[in-house]
Image (cartoon, rainbow, N blue to C red; front, side, top):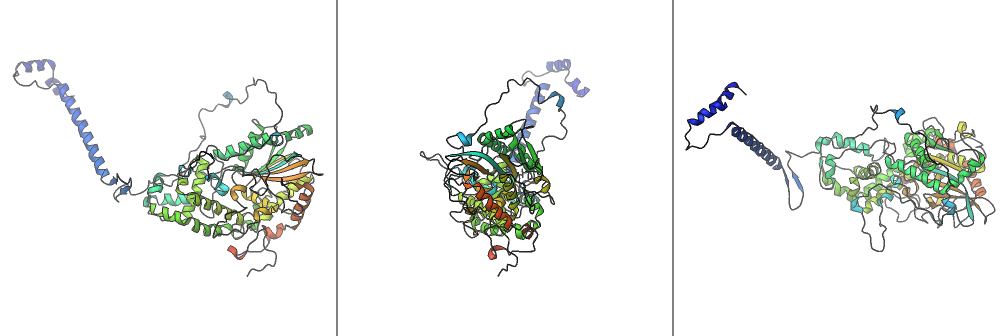
Length: 613
């Protein structure tokens, strides 16, 4: 404040001035009064300017009070956020956290208290019934598909989680789904003597490539054109949507799936560990080097053995890379598997079916996106996005965009893809599963693999330390395509009875469903039995708690519990092994036309000299 200003309003001067003032006039405002009025005027001006600005903006964005619809002029609010479709990443843990002091936070400080253990669980042998796995804890289904529950029935009539094909979380299939009205518990007169478990990894982020659809591809296209499009109606959320998915590694839910599977198997088959105690050995479980494969195996181990699991088992990690023989990733040493015309035949069928079942969805959603013309493949990708976002972050708005029939259609699209790409309709289906069948026979007969002529690894399989024989418990982790390869190689023909699958309609009843056979964390139990009602050991195959008929395997009888004499099963598998030509299927110079001009329902390639009309 200036000195002159101070002198003008000096208290003594103010007193003198007041003596000359006409008392009939209003008192002259004080310095404090001037300041208050100045602040009030400034505050009022600020409010008025804000209101005027708000009115200006609102004049370009009016909302109908009657319809709730938004009307945008080209001048403002016309486009999606510049961040729409961009990838959102939260990197944790930080690379170099500043508060990490390992010596201050040991994992073992002693003073553990009493630690005596109890008897092993044997639920599969002792319980009056078998616990079922409902599939999706911590995941939220779309509110638009929540069904009204009647007073008499608390079971929803439609479960979206069971209609995502290979992207479904695994669940216990209904009793009798595969044609045998029996449960996984030991049949009457029988006791379980062994278990060979083959399972898939848990829920993951999308892979880096996709032959059709692909969430990452779609989000990238949207982000690159964010300056030119916007959405409304059901798609309005996409104006600010960002892509939150990583690539290929397990999601938190996927980790939980394998932990839960480990706990479940320990509760059912823990008593088999007594055999290891008696022989002074520990089990050997197998997985692969890919991040999600190793993480799945270790989460399973924590569930099965508890923490710490060190010293309770040995984890074999096979290398998944070109040039390394690996029955859990057989395509890496099968050159024809890299030829998409042979290994990826399902894409053409998926495209044809998508044009049919997504016709109404495309007509419904396309007008809700301006500046970017949605295609059938885009709409199909939105369905993929629903499944991937749900298993990654728990809920997805994309799920609300489709009705029940469209989800049934999506589920069938997955069936088409895997039938023709990995299973009975694939010319490489059997050969890629035959190496695992060779290993299974070796384990069942306690004899080494006689000839390594497929994806088996002689270095590992011939070493009793890395491939032990005579154990009562084996656990192997692999991919869904390999599970389907193995199902095909075993000749479980009940799943092929409806093939080839049509692409122009969805059969009302079909035996092959990828959501039943190859969901996230799918598991195949080869259950060994000793029965007082049978003179020799028996074997059963149980997929996601559904007992599979073995009548497609030569010599295996129809049995109410799905049993087959072990020797009969082994002899039939040896015949299949002998007839499967790895060299021709994987290295042979053969080709197949796209579409229905050529088909197989056995998973075999065309024979040498076969001519197509």
